[in-house]
Image 1 (cartoon, helix red, strand yellow):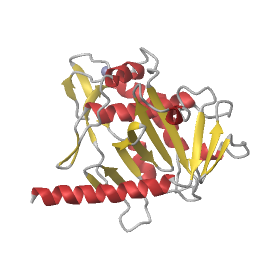
Image 2 (spheres, protein in one colour):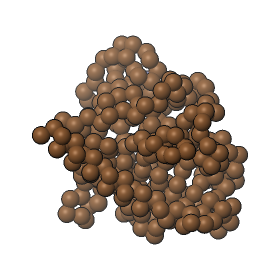
Image 3 (spheres, helix red, strand yellow):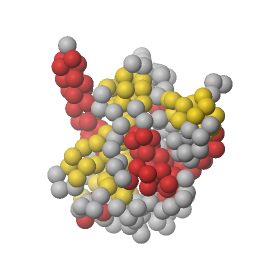
Length: 267
Ligand SMILES: [Zn+2]
């Protein structure tokens, strides 16, 4: 297997044998691949492009120990819990069945999940933070295209230390988790993209099949966002919404428009 020698971006140790690390975990490609479709490759969305590709986005960034740390603390469990089209199952959402929602309205339901057996909140949080952080530290390439990093500002280093298990997440970091309410959710992965939302600041969104993650950071985050936070709210709220897929589609449409616009400007 090819390796490269250099500084590991997670533990910061020099002269390490760097592994070929994935941006989007390899397991996500497996479940987003639709073997029966005419183009069976997963659809990947980023601000620069939307592509259906078998090429995985990867580069030499982490040492073997850090690669294992990322994998063992969130990836495997999270991949096992999202919507799995081949089996027609959505394990994380199935765990909410029979639980009374604390909130209901506008096509959305809110559940306190702190006491639901089998939900590993630490792994959901670790997984999401690891992908957001990867999106911030590197210009990932897919073919000749590059994916513009998201900006986590001073929190980038704090999140690195959290991923190394050296400190807790900062109290100004908020993560909301939304599950699709559709019987058959879209089987789409998107890399983190940043959106300016009025009254709430910058939100970084990303999707894996059936699940949307929204990260909001800063001192000015409004109370509405704070109350949805899986990290800090003791009830560990999670939401099921029929809008998750629609938002993903509208995001896709604006991505298509943006990438066409970018192309036209270049020509
Ligand atoms: Zn390392």
